[in-house]
Image (cartoon, rainbow over all chains, first blue to last red; front, side, top):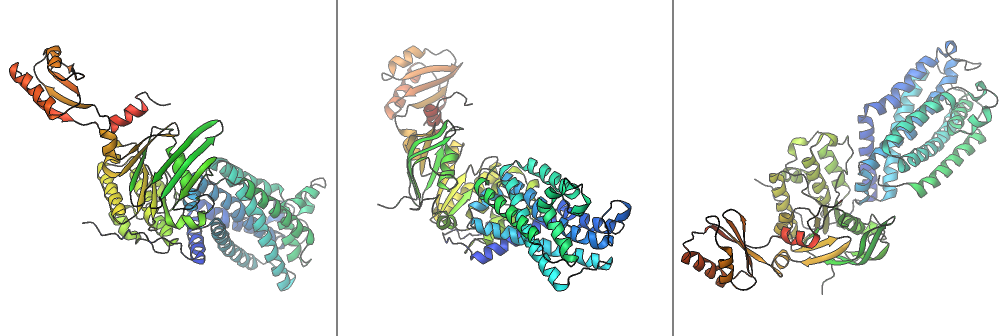
Length: 260
Length: 307
């Protein structure tokens, strides 16, 4: 028995807010469903955090208590994993499997798609940062600078998300999905080791220090470390992240290809 | 004069040095089912995707529901349903979840569950897209194209890779779309499908329109019709031919299998059977054949394989 279907034309887009919300919910669900993404978003940062409390046996993080040095770095790492690595890989495969093309034919406008993606990244990051902050506090983290430090951190996280998100989209919109997968992970590891995310800039060789400060990872990591050490919101970190976000964002609008 | 649902004039599309569409002009009347046929590389998908707003014409004008699909996309997209040739879903999304998501982007969608049941997708509710069979993906693609209750649906090879049951379900749905007042433009490689579904057929080759008309017009125009029959092997075809009107051809295509081609009319049939009677020939399996759309297509586009 077939059900009668009412196929008479009744076209129309759902309200923009509804579309963006549905897109964000869908993207968040897919992100959370993916085991590797959860590993990247929570398990690795938590492991680094726990290991970091014992870090003086592995790497020299400099003076001060290891937990106070490693926690801001882990927060930076969490932002980088979601807004850069996860976003790049997910978007690369959306392009490859014609998801972007399919959504491009739906009533959802491109800005709505971007808004939905951004919301999904923000939701995941809120969960990540909350869990990591609580875990760090339980491990004895003592952030300095009071509420102002958290306000400054929020500014840096937003700018960092914009900069890393634009870089992730730049990669996903120009390379093949497999290349994006490989490169996004490689860059993640390289920045983790050499990008001053976890290890303070002054622990790097003097010749490298100016460069690491100019990396988005260095700016975000160092900015968060400064803030939670009570040294306030550094203008340098803000400017570096703004420039990365602006340049990568402009490059994305020029080069992003919706189809593979 | 009604405004055409799709109006293409002088469309040119190039990829590098290759010209995929070369000065194409055609119209689609609203409320009809139109099939776009053509060998691989004829420019079908490029043309459809230009109508869908994915590509900007290099030359010529494309109007869909009176709008420019590239410039007026935002206004047009809710009114047009699109079925891509492949993909279109997150590989990790479940089939039903994906359809519900696309439905939720529209104002008055068809209830997804009803479409799921109609297209036989009930069993693959929690199956991620990457584990669906080719046929299930096709049906999900069709469902996503029409769930928003569009005025116009572009279906790119809607039955490629479907089993006969699913193919018939798709045909029934296309009929229902037309009955509901939806204009359907589809591409296909199956000539029986075009004959069965389409009010109008456009045949493309090398990016140009080489024939256009209803399936009946295309199969009867200038038709050399055929009679086939079987009898004992080795009949004197020369004698039979001289009995038949001038220009009629008779060949024994295999021992005992005869093919008569020419302007088949009642008179010719009577002459043929009279000749058989006077020669003591029992004509078995005698059948008058019309050309199929496939014959017309092969005549128009040639029989050699395309690269």
